[in-house]
Image (cartoon, rainbow, N blue to C red; front, top):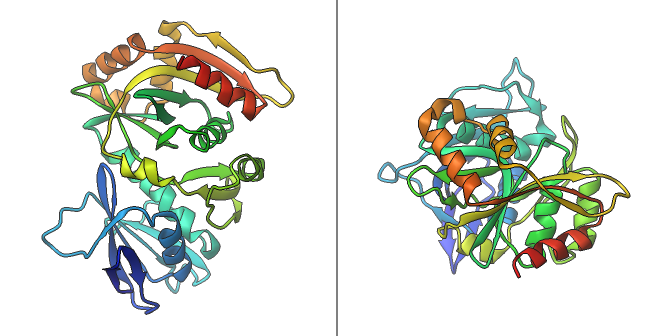
Length: 302
């Protein structure tokens, strides 16, 4: 696979030979190696607004990820993810090769980056104020995140809130929004202009599809913001839209439960969590109607 820039467009040849793509997903540079056309095509579609570089030894790379077919003993119908040459995961069906890349990137950041505080949360921003959406899998945070990004909010991250330990600012980590099952059709209807990658069936999470970040979010990926709200969303079918104040002490405890590396950071982690909560209004949020949810959060800005 050969990579070059041509009139601002990414050009990938169809050679079978595996070569490296260097992709800037701020604040990191990621080297991706693959010969699988499905992975190449999906990266080309979902990351078309990002900076690509020709890889050479002079460029510092944070992470090396390789996605290839399994070997003879693994079976050529499987995909294997290599992180820095190692295989920390069991292989997956070849049809899931692209989400394997996204999941592998999540894992390597959560497992190795300890100069930031990392929370399992989505983050969006508007008018300089960041909103952290924190919750367990299935709570509806990615669905709500995608709906808000489709209605004027800037995407910071769908999977991970990254907090600068020196300034307590949130750092953008802009990547495609991962949606599951019924949320895919819901967001395609709610944000008809959104660009989606292919659907991946029979994964451990059900059906998965990725919504491409809008160009504005990618362009502003260097622009940090302070938290203004911390919200714990919960989708409940046919429920009323209900926003309730949540105690700050309990908020700290919930964020600790949802942190990837709080225990690694000791006093730095505790201090930054307390600062984050002190500066934020904290809420529990129950919803079923996306229109009402987006209007409610826009009203918080007023």
